[in-house]
Image (tube, rainbow, N blue to C red):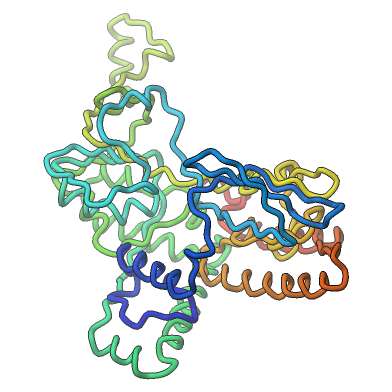
Length: 426
């Protein structure tokens, strides 16, 4: 599911492999193709500027250990920072005062000992499904803070027996055939499921709600876990191993009250007062003001984990990029993100994009999409280098009319998705 199409691994243990298998696979991939030898680590790209006179990109890079800034020049600039690089931690009062261990999901420590500890987990995105079984099994208590819930769709993770691995290894093309078959089946379903106007989307929503009602008997907890909005408005969760059952364990509590602060020992939430409490106070002659209608509650925690995702918007802000005539990429895309095939944009010659805006579809593999973009970009980059043998100042960028035409065609498709404002809030 998460492998590159040409160096396939016949020894995956399951369709959705665990983190350790994925890390090992990509380490071997990088070593096999010599990527570490041509990669500079612990570097921060300060700025990339197009030089019109030299037809080159000038890139200032800072060594994060020494602070030394090095200036590089290149005929081509490839922006491949992606979107999963800027972790989001909410701006909550007192967040820096917490005395226990705390981290974002993207910085998960290896071999952390949760034994005997109370863990506060903030967020209910797809990562929760991956970590909650481990937290529930190892920690003394787990508090899951839930602002709003997305849809949870049950899914069976296929485990590959020894004979299947043998067949993948021995029969040419079998693994590629299986990968394409799964991608077509899953992709076709997801393509329609993320379009609320289709019967597939409506049936998917009904199915997810039936599963929730069947697996969660407590009506209070069921209400907390009820999804909001349409399927796909927020990234749905795929439950591989009894997600709802884990949330009903004795040492797990789901807290829906809004977080208003963090202190040295835990999380502070507001507790909305019930209608009966307010009416009772009115009957006793107490004045009820807007501020006095809610009380606060404190949840003690030894560990505070932020499952609050990544900054998906403002992709162009990862690297300060200045193109032709001083155009800043961040400012160019402020009102509308215009590209050609999501891989190039006007006023930025010889600049290519991987994993940029309008490229992450929920019904297809992100890795496969990156492969297609890389192949497309490579053909154009090869052409640029061939041309610069005779014309050193040669450069390429999209025509404005073609860029606008492609962006408009893409927007018409985006408006059909559950993320479109016309289908309401998530």
